[in-house]
Image (tube, rainbow, N blue to C red):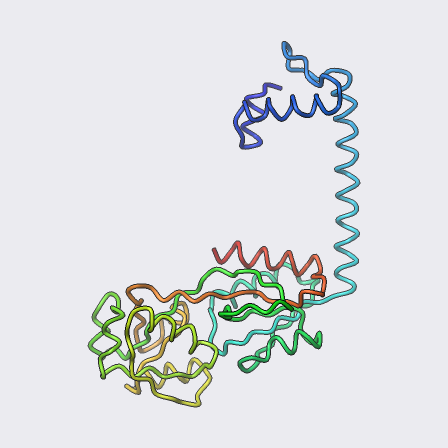
Length: 274
């Protein structure tokens, strides 16, 4: 095998591969490749056979660990936001479909209750808006930022704009309906950073579809994830300028060891949402 071809397969440069091989040969005390023919030396053949055996054993061990993990655990996800990204829900549904042998449950909690339920082990994973102060009792893994926008009645003056300048939020004609406690703090940080102080109304309605129905009838506006807008909705959603990007995190108890299937699901969700 030519080193250049091998380097291309490994997605590294030939000099990097050459250095790595020389380092390995130095550690082992044997020449592994014939530099003229690019073929393995006897020592190289012995090393290759041993490495292939080890990789096969690792594959077997990983399979057994997967089976053990599936027998002993399920994925129980708690979410704090009553309004959260539709994309997350779609990705989670796709993951469940592809892993029908894994038990996955999704539970919704009022603001501030995800962590207590993690402590009692009623759930083993949470997805929450990233808190300003992280708690040392928990581990956090960043989920891709979710963009929030302003949902408007089609007759609202700002509905004709391509985006909503942050400064326009000071307009008294904008009444933002607060219906999720967990989004208020990151929203306020965005307002403070951009020097705006919009008028905000209060409602008790928690269901996103009912909130959108209120907006379509002219009862104020609301800030929700951009992907919550459906083609059939009788309203519009406009991005903010600058964008309002909200940090989300997966959270779990630090002293608890996550199962392999939970770690795999987190990796899948993050990679697909990026």
